[in-house]
Image 1: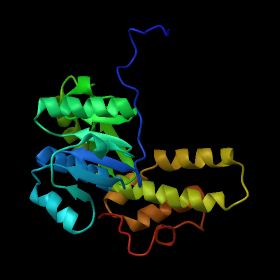
Image 2: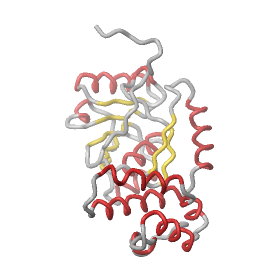
Image 3: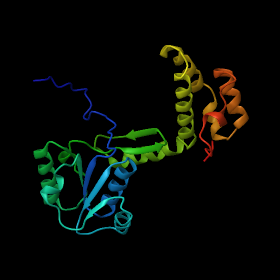
Length: 233
């Protein structure tokens, strides 16, 4: 039996890939709608089960973006599913969802019931490929929300553009015959530069000056980024 470390974290932090995976949301109210939208934004195949459906979910169903089962939950709804989120105010139903998920050894989250979850959902700040998550291990979702709002003001859309640019630079460098370690100081210099600030202010000349100084004449913003991408969305 493993020895429990008193200083250990309560949860094991991961970023879960749900792309094209079957995910079930039980509950069609405001909470269920929010959970379904987050899953859709992450590329999941979403099924919502509920006798009451929000207008937003109905619209998504009409657009064929998710599957809607406008009825009460049944255990068989979890067959072949990767994860389930319970978003109802019916405690008996939430416990049934939890028990059904445990029987299937699948991922389960019951909104506002950490004791009935084998994973919890953090507050999220998303800026393109930059994903910052905040968790209070279920102790205070309100404080996690406050921290999220603080970070939303700290990280702007320039972070998304910067990461896209870094990805383009990485792709170009990988086409050259270099050892991977050769690239490490290059990226460190880019990160330590004022490139993010120049992106924030849409200073195209300044961006190209940084890129040329660190990478050489073959690197400029317009050539690296896709057509129509703007540095300051």
